[in-house]
Image (cartoon, rainbow, N blue to C red):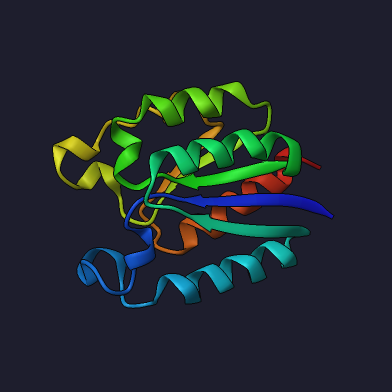
Amino acid sequence: MKKVLILLGPNLNMVGIREKGVYGTETADSIAKEIKECAFELGFAAEVYQSNHEGDLVDKIHESRLRFDCAVINAGALTHYSYALRDAIASVSIPYVEVHMSNIHAREKLRHKSVIAPVCVGQISGFGKWSYFLAIAALREMVK
């Protein structure tokens, strides 16, 4: 069975608690459970990893090249300024899809630019938890 990493950045553990108008009321844990179920239905074993620390995320990206066939990343606010995450993704040879639950292009101007998008195979935003499901479905087609 193929393996997919779902990598979640700062504050994504607070989904369901923070900014419910943007992120909804479902908890991070319940969404993670649904992501794993969706991945399994699409032929993947999924690991969901969340950290509020940039260096931990970099370490997990480095590890991903040895343990996973592909990955989904929602880097949260780090999307917009973390060249460390960008360089880490560029250094591994597995495909990454950038995901956001909210439509980052419809939010504050500071959220419009992603520094990790150029090293990801694609970007999906604005579909809530479905953004993750869509990314996994897309990756299934890429890593057959």
